[in-house]
Image 1 (tube, rainbow, N blue to C red):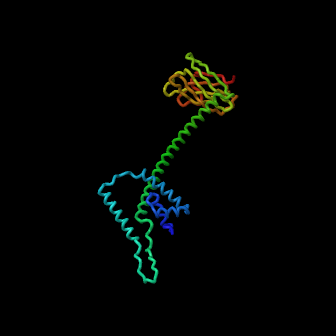
Image 2 (tube, one colour):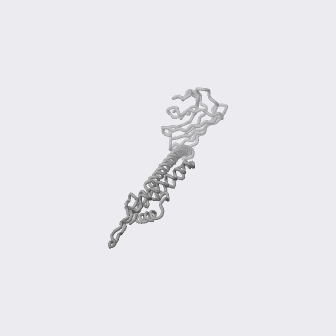
Image 3 (tube, helix red, strand yellow):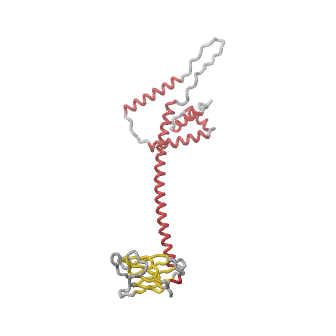
Length: 281
């Protein structure tokens, strides 16, 4: 009969086998049970993986010689006690005419309880450390994934803006309106007007710097009068750009103009026209 006919004994032996602590008859009996039990084979594989993590998770601390000697003595004494507790009973003497068969005492447990408990504790420690390590790695990967998602969102937003600008400048229906200066300094401007999309991109050059509280304002000139567009300030080089949309019939836009106005813009122009361009051509 196999040493491991009861499933509870097998479970205890698996923990010790995971640490390569079984030998001889006990290992042979366990292997015989594993040959016909897929559940126990899977359990042993899992315990071996956990045991292999102990070398990476448990710090190495050299045991003091005196303490090591005491621990060794206790283990040897415990092992000797286990052996003494499992010796077979002495045979009984019977009459000459009777054939006497010695009756062995109940077979001791194939696996000392203290060794199975020690193996289980070690494997539990390894599993806990392994789980903690996995949680740390998962948290780090989640943070990296979130950062990559944010970067991707910013890149997609920038790409969409650039594609919109390119479509406003390079479409086959785009008209280019040149603005000439009405002053001696000769500032100029150029508008890329997309009637199909009802959008425009305006560039100005050589604009004089404006005083604090003042800005330039773009105007769409219609038969009904000027329609206010965004305000802007040029850079140090006198260059500025404005992008915008409008809700007007295309045929009503007759000209484009720029004036100097109070910061934030006004509903109707109050300053002198700086540059102007004909949109009806």
